[in-house]
Length: 156
Image (cartoon, rainbow, N blue to C red; front, side, top):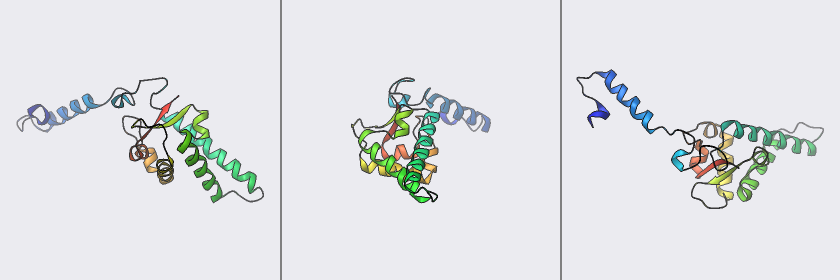
């Protein structure tokens, strides 16, 4: 207990140094280490770059598909609906959007079950629309929307 808090005689700097030492000891060495995932290769947590690339591909694909059906007009909100369909349906049943398949990543459930399922995929999609849950990450490489739905994005 003394190591964690220090003594009041040691002063505030000693307590701060002890807190930093403990934080460094608890921090995993790579994304997914606490979940038992490998450091690199298949089954490792996907990097933010791959996830961002997959998201960008999905957005562009949704705009192109929507534009093909609403040619003279600007796609507008219909692109958002197309993106939601491109996200929810494939992730529900196959674990990956078209962009994820192109960047060789996929969504898996942390509990080990095979399918993400429509409820989790819909919740992930809805939380991605809010943006903040999708861009705030922990040391395991999981964003809020992954943690709230019990999923993680892995490399193939």
